[in-house]
Amino acid sequence: MPLRLLLLSLSLSLLSCVIGIAPRSILDPTATPEPIQTPAPASSPTPAIPLASSPTSRPADQPTIRPTDQPTIRPTDQQPTPLGGSAQIAFHSGQTGEEDIFTMNADGTGLVNLTNLARSDITPRWSPDGARLVFVSNRDGDRDIYIMNADGSNVLNITNNGNEDDSPSWSLDGQFVVFASDRDGVNNREIYRMRPDGAQIVRLTHDLGFDLFPAYSPDGQQIVFVSNRTGDMELYTMNADGTQVQQITDEPGQDLYPVWSGDGQFIVFASNRTGDFELYRLTLGSNALLNLTNNRAQDASPRFSPDGAQLLFDTNRDGNYEIYIMEFASRAVTRLTNNAVFDADPDWKQ
Image (cartoon, rainbow, N blue to C red):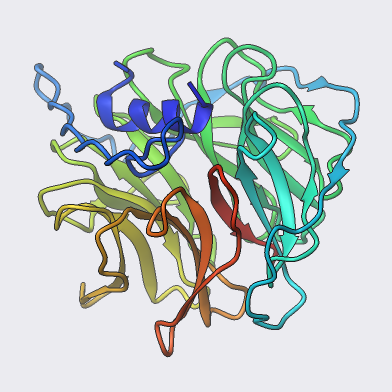
């Protein structure tokens, strides 16, 4: 089973059946997505969140250096409508028969395979300076978080333990990477923070639910994340040190993949609260909610462009999962990739 499909099952089925995707069939791109089963709350009473207590520190696991993977340049499958700008987009794709990390220009041209291994490499996230990428891979057995140069060289396993680590995201100053892990309990996932070299690992959440998909606010003072601690997968915020946890959505269904806007005023996320997964924009402070997409498909993995005027996301609205871009002003949508297999989890180079 592709790692991306496996990871969503973990986040929505409490490890009973992946990182993160809206329900989708990668093995059969034409299949009708199966409905998500809401995770059952823990049978024992949920303990109070230790808001005032300091997060617990762990000694850093020893990173492992791997030989450099040879990036592979491939012809572009499609020439979509040029959108301007020089920013690059990283994403993962199954077009090689495995899940690999690719980059392309913001108009869909210049496709480069950065990993090209017979393993699953997913969820690439650019460092703020654009020099490196963190990503998730099972190349050493279990899922770990890796870092590499923007050209695919100098791959380093920065978690390197026998547990499942995923959902990495950078702080805007490049000093920290937050991620989700089950290292302190196989039937539980918590949010952790570490340095980009894997040092100074600190646990930020403490509860019996599953905490996933952390993302820093632009000022680095807060983290938004997803948790099922009250039943459904809902959005929460907390201070960067793990204190002052607040629930910010409360609707039936699953709210996933939160990301902050560059000005810190909005959080965009995917939710199946109306049936299929759509993209929503939440205005912080007023809690005003704007539905950004509305179609009979699964839209997920939103990411803001550097100028905040566009939104990257993946969707199966035209069959299999591909990368699309939306203009906020007009809501016009342009397809950037066009392959017989899935392309997913895009991220802008800031």
